[in-house]
Amino acid sequence: MKKVALSKKTGWRLLLPLMAADGILTYFAGGEANPIWQIFVKRFGFNIFTVLAGFIPALILFYLVTKIGGWLITKVDQYPEGEEIVLTGLVIAYSTWVFYLAFLRPIFGYFGSRSHYRVIPFLMVPLIIYTFWLERRKKTGRTPSAAASFLPELL
Picture 1 (cartoon, rainbow, N blue to C red):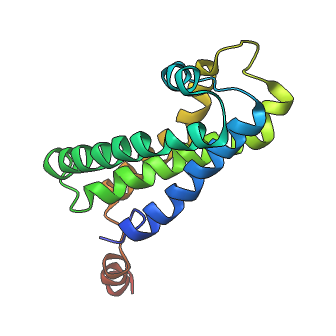
Picture 2: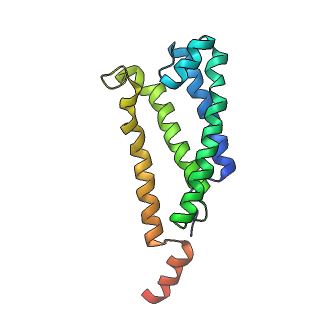
Picture 3: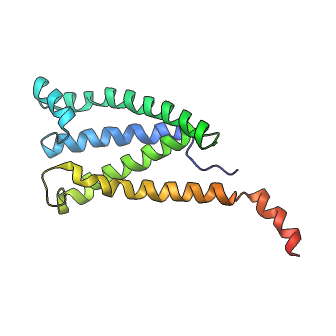
């Protein structure tokens, strides 16, 4: 089957700058909106170091999510590249989040609320599209070799 996800190397190379951009945008916004990181920031002060220090636990969490989710996708959905699919999903979600923070939040805010949780459906739309595309790709099994094998039958 044709590749349906980013390679691990490319995925991590895209995810790391997105995480840094999130921290930098948070710092320049003047406050941390995530209640989990707010506790950390209130305890140690709000500066660029404490905002970017959240990078380390988030990286560990993403690594664990990639490993566990990848294992599940490989076992349940029978995709050989489960970790790459999870990592691609993380890159899609995080790039959507950074796009929202950089370009849409200044215009729309948190969609009529002070809570950043209202943005979650907005983040899920690209992931749902990717999932539907992935499932369709799996069902049709479209690969260049499969398409080429049907060509002689048509002629």
